[in-house]
Image 1 (tube, helix red, strand yellow):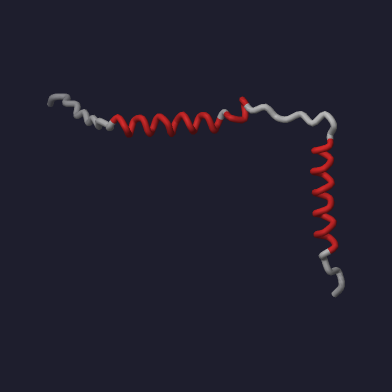
Image 2 (cartoon, helix red, strand yellow):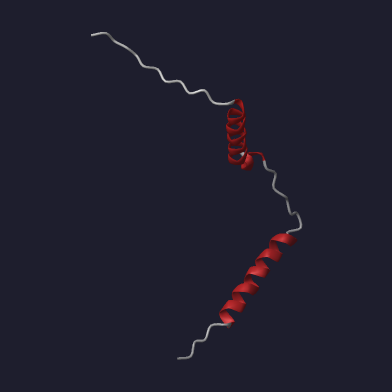
Length: 70
């Protein structure tokens, strides 16, 4: 018996290779975006406290709407 190797080659068109390359670059850019992002620094704390007070107001409105009577 002879050892024959069957080799299948698929030639992709250049536009498809370019499209796949752009997809891979976009995927990597999306995955590594948090590494290169710069977060805002709030020295006064105003935006941070505003977010907390809005959350407390929303929670208070939700609790007020609960009817505890049977």
